[in-house]
Image (cartoon, rainbow, N blue to C red; front, top):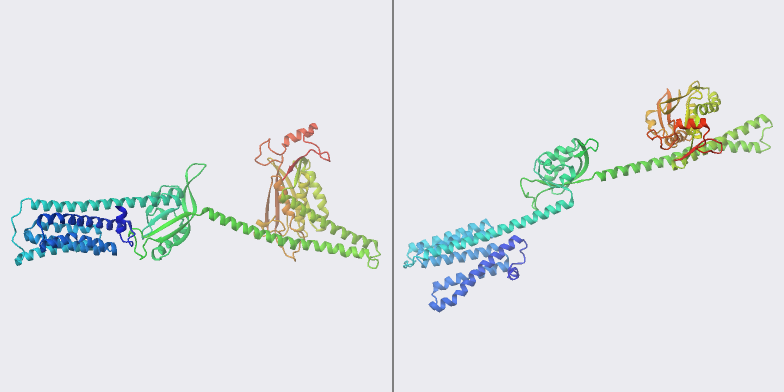
Length: 610
């Protein structure tokens, strides 16, 4: 039956609720017509050929078939219902006219017209059906006043109750049908609501509805996942109060633009979420980045679905995206820095190689040519000395490049051994004393001998001291001072190299120690060098788990402080960690123990690979 009814409904009807109205109309009218047609043979058998009036009554009883045909062919429920109501009103009018006029109990059937129109769901149809019923009553009264209505015949006392019961039954049937349609509508809404809830829980994004003032009137369950608090915390102005103060203008502008713009509006801002501190377990403010897409809650014609809801917003967490963007920016900055370092390396190395190579080639050609070679042996020795110094300079630069490469690649091996740091400091000062004298500088030593036992790589420490003193001498003008200070504080050996040189600008301090960086990195810089000396120092200090600090004032000088652990361990390492216990090392040296092993020089060492 349902399949046949579905076949009678016009194809243009797609909405489920409207389709149910069409099916109800078709079913009720077919039942009325079927009853009329079924009663016709019985009537003819009992009363014979009907009169004109009786024929009209039978015709109007079968008229719903025409209304069903119109509805099935056109899909216009209003037109079909108007035809059905008109035929029913005419039927009641004729029955009332032949059964007592205004006093006929058949007039009660006119009450069913507006009730019947409820099935259309159209107020216009209800008003039209009511007017038809009133018109029918007026016609019956007018016919009786004109004397056209035949005199009322004696009626049984059961006629009026039967007509009233029939009318009540019909109205009750219509009301029950309306109740069933309402229940079905509620069930459909419940299914839609459940489906929407599943969708909201599946997408995981926060969905909020806002009124015209921006206040939140609905919050999805994803609020607890996003902000770590119940959804009710975002009701009203709760959402706005969680927006970062600096981002609130953009948030308000997005909501305002969405109210007046047909398309979606997207905005990114920071949202305060309820995070818990792992240490204290107390609520602490934390901001996350979110992206909110806002759209006007209106139909295709721009009419709001609900006056209390102006816009709908979908908010999602984009903190990881922001972190990826920051990481990408850092990677780009590092790539730019690496490219700059490469360019600086090529410029610096080419400049530093060209000068000594020109000297080596030039003076070696002079010495090799009989025509150009000086006859004075003193001049020949001077030229040979220049070639030798240039070669040493190249060798020093190549060694520094190799050391820096090994440090950065993690292949620099430390040979930890206990030694007197004072001896290393004195040796380095003795080596640099002549260079300081040539530069007209005074090299001051401020440390005690045999008072600084240190467990470290002696060669690396020597290179640290030499590089620092060489830098201090290089950047200190004639007449200045360079001081080397050493002391022991707690379990730390502290070395300080200070000068009264040109100093370093504050903007250059953060980049100091970067490979190939010099405060004046240009071809006309007054000081030679690759800019690797301090980089090597930083790398060697880091391998010893030490620290380096630089204080400088332009025009006054620079102070470099290096801190190294006395026992060669990390500052936070336990006594049984990597490295040598200074007390244990001293006692074993005194006893002549060889538990640490011997190197080629007979020194007790332990190797550490970076």
